[in-house]
Image (cartoon, rainbow over all chains, first blue to last red; front, side, top):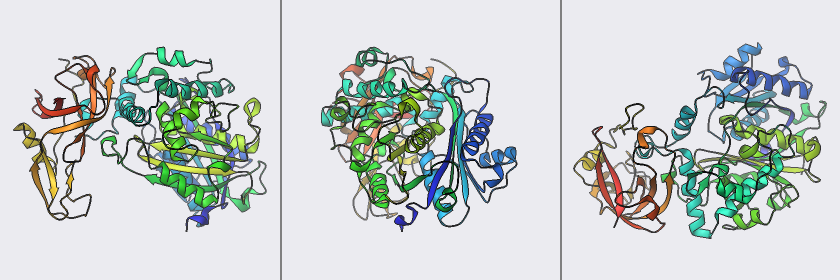
Length: 391
Length: 136
């Protein structure tokens, strides 16, 4: 009964920590600060929390991560789990937390994620950690970083659909234009297509500026039942649709290099919400590398297959475009601390739907779509968030 | 040759030992399902198509085409950097499955999608033989 989750849960609080280069706070502290910030935003106390979801930290790994955070806070939840499906982590966690609320397992869940990839993990270890998504026998021995795996996707898209390096670069340029309006973003100086194409080649055809940042930071949201949400201080942001799709883990096993299981996650989320891509006002899409955005725009139905490059080049995902994408600046320009990366796409979507976007508030933000993907286009989760409980 | 950290060496499992043993003999082998005839890679205990556990091994032609590639300039560790940039490949084998590998026998810049390639075994001093591909 996938329809059963529509409007059952709402996000009632959200907070980001300082992001970017934050050497003075470790990942546990960042996680705790994010939780306290989100609870304050919601007007709730820690004792209102009966569910906690975290993701493990690379910099400070801890087998019982969520339990450790609960212990630190001295809360004693009924539902407590740490998750890790890479970039898909955030939204699969939200999906499952909403299900936990809908089935009465718990009532108020905090989803909190933080890490310190920039300041507390060596660049070599961060690269090796990312590459560990490769198959240990049939991929990892070739020594390629994760950027090269995404480059394989980019190259295939270029070959199949005539996508150009300029079109890939246009994703980075547009995302930076959004970040320029976000005082919290790690990288805010506007860039041009030429800046991207002239930046160092990392793994053909991906240049340095086609790749996301390596950052510190954390974020948290508070999710509760729609009933509880109605009398809290913030305007509730309802979860109207959620869907997952899982196509493979290893890129060499992908059934297609240019079409992902985002097709499935999107279809499931739209169906639950009772709406389609044309209804969506903005989309915050996982942008670890520029080609991912093109493929997600296509697979989520915002443009036809193969037309992602032209869609972006026409300015449609820019701040004044028809579908603003990554209004906070995304992983490319806002921050990317690893597993927690997609959290900031979520907290930004919450702010936009609430109308709290500050100088970057969109004119229309009643319905937002957020999408996370992990591995190499492997695990996908799409969420649709709205201002009204019944859309 | 850099000593630490070294290259990541595949550690065979019960399912994959036959594949790596064949590589050591400079033969490329693939699993074939006795039930439905599907050829698969990587080796598994069951057929990914029909679920049968009745699988055998068949020698592959070693021929394929480049499905996609990237030229790696910043590998995961210095152990991979000694020969300079190299082309990472996805090779679609003549028998159907896709395999990740690297290009040998020509400059990495010569790689292209659709390039016909053939297997070329590389005996690593670490004691494993890796199936690479060269222009056909």
